[in-house]
Amino acid sequence: MQRIVTGGEGGVANVHVARTKSLPRFFHTGYDEVYYVLSGTGSVNLNGETSPLRPGSVVVIPAGVTHSLTASPGGELEFVIFGTPPIPITDERARPIKA
Image (tube, rainbow, N blue to C red; front, side, top):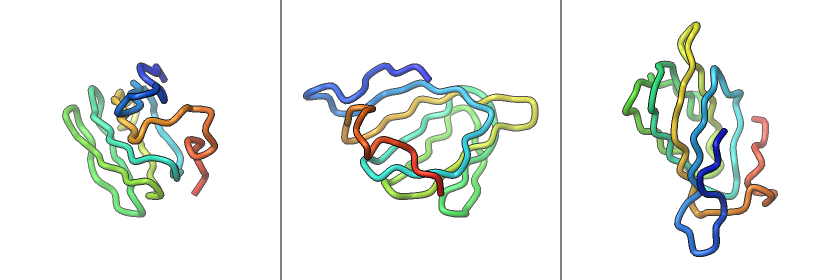
């Protein structure tokens, strides 16, 4: 995870670049997220509904929605995460909660 902007005063979003093979099911309570896929293929699961991912895919994840990601076998997903409103990473609401 590369944190480009996190909880800056007067900012409009947290902006992070992430790479992963998979993310287990979790949710956040403090902010909405938008994922923009830069590279790789795989799938995202939102509240039990699975959709494919490829470069250019956009995923909107409202606060409280359970989500997980899985890259295609042998691959990795790279994506930008935009979180709004911006909150410090130390804020309890920013911590992932296992679903």
